[in-house]
Length: 227
Ligand SMILES: C[S@@+](CC[C@H](N)C(=O)[O-])C[C@H]1O[C@@H](n2cnc3c(N)ncnc32)[C@H](O)[C@@H]1O
Image (tube, rainbow, N blue to C red; front, side):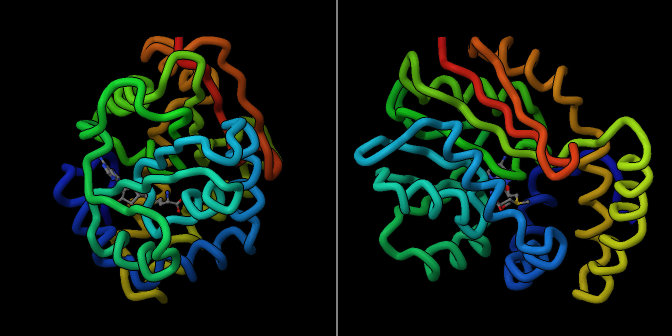
C-alpha cells in the first residue's frame, strides 16, 4: 500500500497508468456529482467569453472543458501524457499541453484565471504550485482550487473514513490498480484543512480568500484574487 507524498515521477507514472479508467472511476466514486462541483469552481473563477483560463493538473480535462463551454480561451496543462491523450480525445478544440504545475512555462500575468481540480493534493511542493498559479494570472484575476477535504465531525467524518479507507481502495482493486486508489485517501488526509489552504494561498500572493464547502463538507472550493 502506498501512503504519503510520492516522488513526482511516481505520481506521473501512476496517472499514466490509470488514465483509461479515471473518468469512469470519478463518476462512480462521486455518483456523477463532480460535474456540479466543476461548474461551481468555474463560477467562482468569474470568467466568461474571451477570458484566458489555465487549468493546471488538468488530467482528462473536465474542468478545462467546463471553462471552454462558457466561451473562455482555455489551456489545459498536465505532466501525464496518458491523461492528456484522453483530454485531447474528449475536447480537440482545447489546447492541452504537457507541463509541470510547479514550473509553469507561461509568462507572468498571461491568464485571467487559473484553476486546479483534484490536483493540488498531488503537488510535491504545494506552496510552489500555488505561487506558480498566482504568477501566471494578471493582478485582479482569480485562482480557484477544487479539492477533497476531510470533514472534522461525525457523522460525516465517519462516512468519509469508511468511504476513503474501505470503498475507494476496494474500487481500486476492482479497477486493477490497488496502489493508485490507496494513494488517493492518503493524499487527501495529508492535504491542509480549508483554513490552512486559504493561509497558504495568501502566502502565495492571493488576497480576499473565500471558500465554499459542498457535498456535506467533503469538497472545498477556494478562490483568491491575485494581488
Ligand atoms: C486526480 S487527477 C485530477 C485531474 C483533473 N484536474 C480533474 O479534475 O479530474 C490529478 C492530476 O494532476 C496531475 N498532476 C499531479 N501533479 C502534477 C504536477 N506537478 N504537474 C502537472 N500535473 C500534475 C496528474 O497527472 C493528474 O492528471
